[in-house]
Length: 86
Image 1 (cartoon, helix red, strand yellow):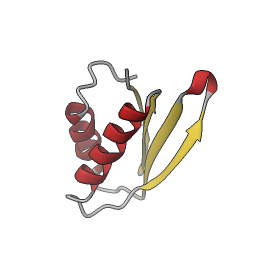
Image 2 (cartoon, helix red, strand yellow):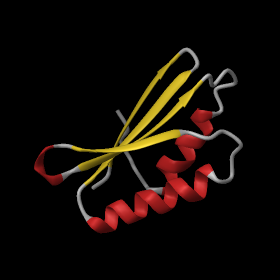
Image 3 (cartoon, helix red, strand yellow):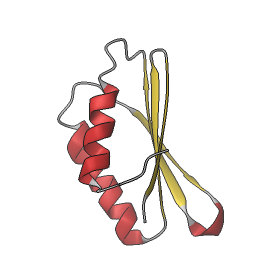
Image 4 (tube, helix red, strand yellow):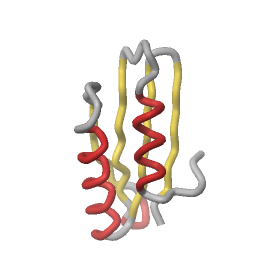
């Protein structure tokens, strides 16, 4: 199961997606590439390893004056069929 968390402040937004399996990793990577390529904003992305073999892929948008990242995050979450986002 892919877990999602969004954090947003003035002109800054972050989406963190945690996954365990190689299939989930592939699914998350393909979705992010597909969705972000459709938009003019380029996120900073990085991946970190956490406990129990999970990894977290993080997308961050800085200086997002028009809050375009919200639309991008929503599209990613819907595409990955994530039902709960913290």
